[in-house]
Length: 294
Image (cartoon, rainbow, N blue to C red):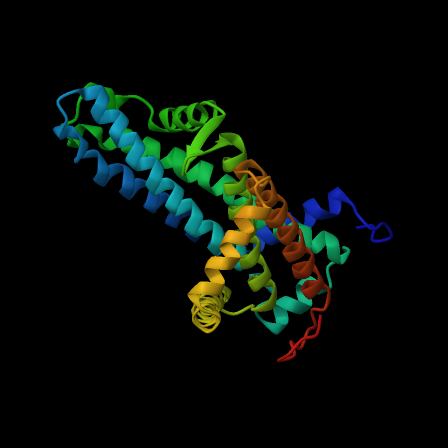
């Protein structure tokens, strides 16, 4: 491979192919895990919806429950995939093999990034399709209405798209806002949360998911305790005066503007986490030091 150029898509594809082939067992186990989670949700939720008198209502209720469970499963596996972005660097031999590949550092990092993002999307699609096929095969074992013989995945996609095409306005705490902006802020928060696990996986090679999760929980607890101490130290009168000052001087601030600031904030810190993760990867060494400087 040509390493004279800074960036090359063929080299990224070759690095990804090499990573997928060498870690096919791990990828297969994770695919089976996602498939098992989807199938358990589809099968065990199906028997509980047959009690509805209206078959169509029963099926719509079933799809709503499945959609919520699917979102939870995808979220958990998304964080697990992100935290294991550098699982191919866990041992000295693996670090030598990966760092010596004839590709630039940004190409190697981008290849791993695509594996834990696009690779997750592909695994979710395959696992959901297999779970749907298995559900069809198991339908004769359940006493369910005829409405359950239609595609669940198609209805899930229809529900998601219909929710996105609803009114662009909404109300929260008597404040109007653009619904699409609220959804965009929510997605920005999720991508930022995902980038935190990518950052943790770029620093910790062994058990990165649990170490990142533990660190985030510790930070949350410390911030909660610190905020309580600050409020008690400042006093309720000062906090009330500060709240009144904010209300008097920031009347121009609307919920739409707050959501826009939220999108900008989470997007900026997402890019920062990705850049920091790449910086950590560029400082990778065969003999991993205990403490690494950025």
